[in-house]
Image 1 (cartoon, rainbow, N blue to C red):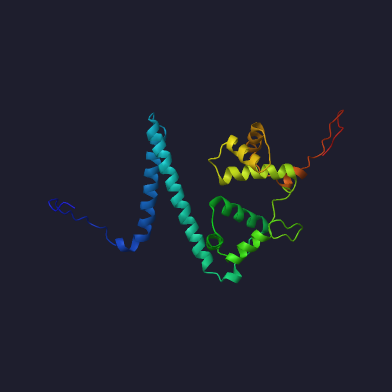
Image 2: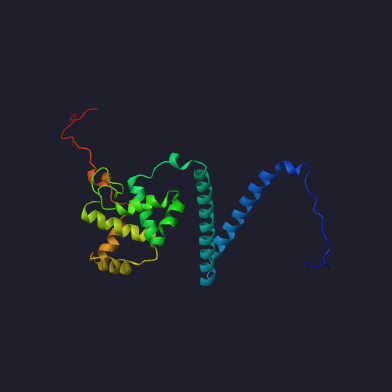
Length: 218
């Protein structure tokens, strides 16, 4: 700091120390409003570099906020003894293994992040292809059928690897023995819902048409 600058004493409001926590929240809210206004202005700029920088700043902020959310939740879970923590359901175990594959995590890394033991992750991996209602790891029902499975796979690739385009997705699936046309991949991604029992078993109410006056009554 330049020593030639005069020191300025800022007067603090009376009783300020009793309102520190409120001040913290107010300052953060003010900072968020300021950032939202500046990012909104930059995102609508005619300068493409400025728009790109605004998007990068927004994404970086989002990553930091998500990390803080995860840190808080992890700290809360760590206060519970390991044997008292809730178990992951079979479909969540599959999602964890999918994320492990997308991240390239080791058994130890995956176990640390999801607060289980490495032996637990190894057990899930070893029992991936079990069948039946007692299977340790399961796909969302009814994604055990081939068309639903392919749709599920395409959608999960888009979620876990969002930078993959439709052509690259089709090429990767072709290496795995699933040959899909580009239009098929596009159609699967257009449908926002994952395969599930509600769409397959949805029943529409029976419609009755009135054929003359007073034919129907309520």
